[in-house]
Image 1 (cartoon, helix red, strand yellow):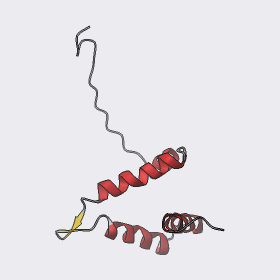
Image 2: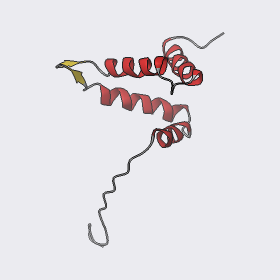
Image 3: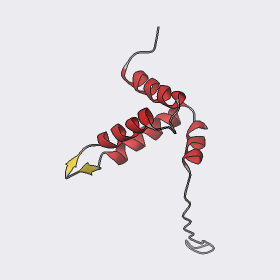
Image 4: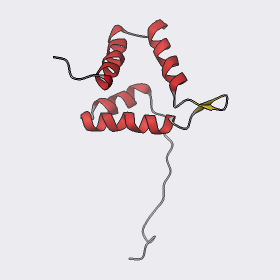
Length: 94
């Protein structure tokens, strides 16, 4: 069979909900979850604000502020983000 014979190229656009993305993330093991954050950082590296590359800093501040102040936030969500930050910057707890 020659290349292209019997092949169909199909493009599907799907709007994922935050819940669906969270379920996919939570189904990963630590390596996959770490790769998720590596990919987020790579994508955000090119973001800029008023012509200044920020690497997503403003977005992370906005998301953190939202978690801190919005009624939709939960203590568990804030604790999870704080724990990830702590773990990424320190040795394992004693």
